[in-house]
Structure formats: structure tokens, C-alpha cells
Image (cartoon, rainbow, N blue to C red; front, side, top):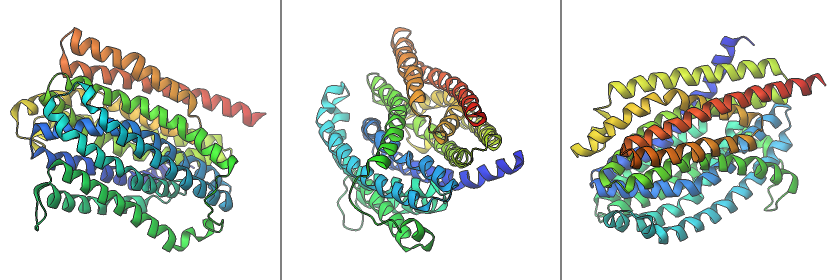
Amino acid sequence: MTFKQHLSGTLNLAIPVAIGQLGHIMLGVVDSLMVGRLGAVQLAASSLVNSILILILIFGIGMSVAVTPLIAIAKSSDNHDECGLIYNQAMIVNFLFSIFLSGIALISSEFIDYLNQPAEVILYAKSYMKIMSLSMIPLMIFQTYKQFFDGLSITKPGMYVAIISNVVNIIGNYVLIFGKFGVPALGLDGAGIASFLTRFFMALSIMIYFYKSEKFKKYSKVKFQFKLEKKITKKIISTGLPTGFQMFFEVGAFSFAAIMIGWMGANQLAAHQIALSLASTTFMIVLGISSAATIRVGNFLGRKDLVEVRKAIYSAILLGVSLMSLFGILFIILKDFFPTLFISDISVINYASELLIIAALFQIFDGTQAVSLGVLRGMLDVKIPMYLAFISYWIISIPLSYLLGFTFHLYVNGVWISLSTGLIFAAVFFVFRIRWNINRIEKSIEV
């Protein structure tokens, strides 16, 4: 394959995934937009809860993401039975894990009082978190199907479900937050209930598609049994758990940053949520390229074609860096406009505008580390990247956040500069890890 064909192949896989990821993150953005109409306190409470919940949910997402490279490698040799077995075991593992994570989240809601947040924020946050905790179960079911489809290079179903779910979420928010059509206004709790209903819709829709579509019949020949198979389960967990920890170290750094920013006041925390919502939107788009890299690298690795593996890697990283550079320019140009979409409080808008400049500067490195991680997952290399993520975000970024934010009095800007530094180190580490893997695979093929 030529380099141009690789670019085209990566884009064909990445665009539906990116749109689906954008649709998924837009659920949170829409929540922030509509909750922001209730005021800065409710928006801050939403930010706090989502920052805590993602720390728990990320392990489930990591477990589901493990399905994609395993399926991609099995598919490269047309092993339909193994694909079916991976699907069966992933569904059992992820369902049980989702119940466990939901329970952890419910228990954690009782400890929000100890996070030293403003009293008015805590008041709204506790009940909202309990509602959102229950939505983890349908979300994990959806994720399992989506990652299975992605591994088969069938990336459009997840996209369509994500797009339609936004309509469901907007209607649910409008009715439940503000009280329409005879339904009482539930405020922030209404947003939580709408999120649960939306995620239930997502799980049900993609499940129906799987069982109704003829293209999946060959993978469902393996009879589904609610029984764990040691060999496949071990593969899923050994790939998924380190992936979950790697995601935890990255997302956890941003979540802990939200807690530190909460010590500075509700306005700075609300500004953080706005800037993070926008930065997360661009990140979700580049994750489409990351997922495409996982699929394509897994496919070519399964065929032991190192030449095509290299081309798949370089084309994906080039696309990721180019796209994120454009987003960085957009953030700078529209830094004063984007925050006004979320809130009218001038103080919050000013803080958020400054944060978008910092976000613009780290876009290239965020794109590089995201795509590089996709490549490493395609190689089933997840343990060392987990350690590298820990060093980047918790050894470097978090201590620096406290130093710049509080010791040098840069406050929320200092925290974001420190988070950017962590992303830079992660990008460099992961690129060098890819080079090490290529050399290792080359030697193993020669032998």
C-alpha cells in the first residue's frame, strides 16, 4: 500500500469513530450548556461530579477498549470463532465490572463533603452523582458493542447511535431540567436522569442492531453462555486493566486538577469546566484517529507485515498532529466567543478565555500522545505506557500544578500550564516507546 492509501484508509475508519466520539462528548457539552443556564454553582457541581465519576468509569472504558485490538488481530486471520469468543467474554466481564463500578460510585457520593468544596456546590453534587452512577451500566454495555464493531472495522453504527442520542439527551434535558409538558423542574438532577435515559437508549439501540444485522451472524455462531473462559478472559483483563490505569493516570490528573481549582472558588472551577469541555471535544475527535491506528496496526501486525505497520503508524500520527494544530488555531481566534456559549458571567468568561490560549498550545502534544497510545494498543503494548503515563501526569504534572497554582500564585492558569507539561512528556515518551516496539517486532520477524 502507498502512503496515500494509508492516509485514506485511516481517514475512512477514523471519521465515523471521530464523529461518534464527538457525538458522545457533545452529550457532556450539551449538559454543561443547559446546566450553565441554572448558574455557576450548578455548573461547578456538574464539573465536580463528572471529574470524580470519570476516575471510576475510566477503568470500565479501558476494559472495553481492550476488545478492539484483540478483535482486530483475530480478524486479520479470519478467525470468526475467536472473534465470537472475545465478544462473549468481553460482554460478561464488562457487565459485571460495570455493576462493581456503579456500586463504587454510589458509595463515593457520600464522601463528597470531604473534598473541601464550596457548601453550595456540595449540596447539588451529592444527589446528581447518585443518579449518574447508575448510568454506568448501560454505558458499559454500549461501549462493549462499539469496541467490538470497531475491531471489525465497522465503525459507523457507533457513530449513528451517538448522533441520535444527542437528540434524545437534548429533549430529556429540556423537559427534566426546566420542567416542561407537566414535568416538574428538577434542575441538575434532571440532567442526571436525562443522561441515564440517554445511555439506556444507546445500549438498547446498538444491541438491537447487533442481533438484527446479518453481517454479525458468523460471529454469533459461538453460543453465548454466562461463563468465563480463562484464556480469553485473561487476555481481556491483561490488556484492559493496564489500559484503564493508563487512562486513569491521565484523566485522573485533570480530575484532581479540578479539585485543586475548586479550592480557588466556584468561578474558576466553572471556567475550568468550560475550557475542559472544549478541549475534550477536540480530543474526542483525534481519538477517532487513535482508534483507527489501533485497528490498522492490529490488522497488519496480525499478518506480520512490518512495512505496512510502519506506514499505518506514520500516517495516523501525521493526521493527528495536523488536525490538532488546526484546532489550536481555532481556540486562539475564538477564545473570547466560545465561553459565552456556556455562561453569561463575565468573570467566568474571562478565566475561560485565558485557559483556551493554554489549551491551544498543548493541542499538538495532546494529539501526538493520543494517537501514539492507539498505536501501542494495536501492538498490545499497554503495561509500559501505563507507567509512562503515571510519570508524566502524577510525578511531573500534579506536583507542578500545585507549585505554579498556589506557590507562584498563577492559580487556574498555573494548573493548566502544568497539565500541558504532562502532555508534552507523555507524547515524547510514547513516541520513543513506539520506536522500541518496531525494533523489537522487526527482530522477532527476522528470527
